[in-house]
Length: 201
Length: 253
Image (cartoon, rainbow over all chains, first blue to last red; front, side):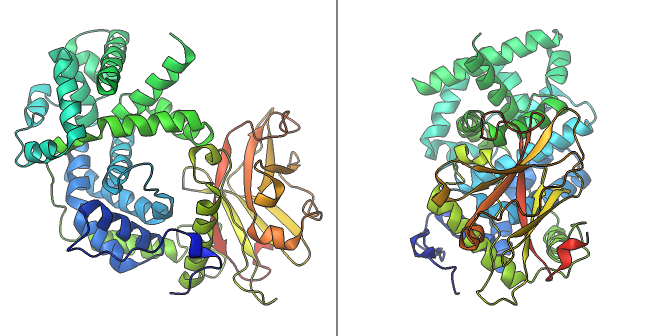
């Protein structure tokens, strides 16, 4: 491939070597190729990440039809924005998941899903999903976050999880805990500050 | 509570997902112009990301990839870009070459760092040195959807042409066009303030060297009436996207 002039100082094109590269490195390589409009790399990136992104969006939107639409939108955005991905700012999967989460939450704010049950939602949450615990324990950052979450009062921890994982708005959380929205906002802020302090310690 | 606390909590709630629709829209606009806010959002994304490990992976239906690929094909063909639809579909190889140059520009200057996101990133680049190469138009987009402005530049004559697409005059505000290039120093330089009818003097780039124009980036920001009081973009900037176009085509949108 003939590169643009002076591009020798640019980060080298990565050709993924699945056997040796860490999964994140492979994704970085795929994203770089996608940024150069490589359709094959795009299909590989989709294969490697779609279950994670689909699960993330489905958890928030609950309906497969809407999830299909949003995941489509998300991968189109990834195709268009791949050149904006920077390794220094986030891991590839974190970057892609953030795009998916924000798209799902935006959709849920535009058109709320049918009210659903907090108990049911939370029941999915703790680390009893197969593989989740194992994955989390590999990852020191994940362990620290979970340790810090454990330090929150149980009801605040539930609010954080319902918001982050299920996309609940302040108003939905307020209805769930039967408190004014402003109270929930205050609780969320306290919980977030406590988490930040705990993670920084 | 201090302002810094406020902005940190705004970032945190944006990432957590608890803001209402309008607040979310406002934050997603603001982060493009406020490096501090953007950095805080990224920091919160990183803090909370491990929570997402708990989400069960779910395989999408078998036909979703094909659906996405069809959609991308339509987009690449220009079907979805109203401003580009009257031009020939961009040649993918040309587009790829342009994107490589754009990425190089970002890497080489750190333009994609949070601080530089203040300015829209638009590169007007000829693909070759031959005079027959088509001119390029920069399409300034908001929210990655409808083009807001198109800017075409004829490098030979240094004539520019700004055309609003979906952008409309904003009462009590002015749009201002900026140019940025390493040779002009670290900060963007004003090209001019758009008139009330959103036009700009076609000769506004006459003092710039064509070589510089080839590699410069452009941005459009929203400023107080008459333009930025500080000489630097102070208001929301509109991001850009690139389309090659037929020679002479930008004149008719």
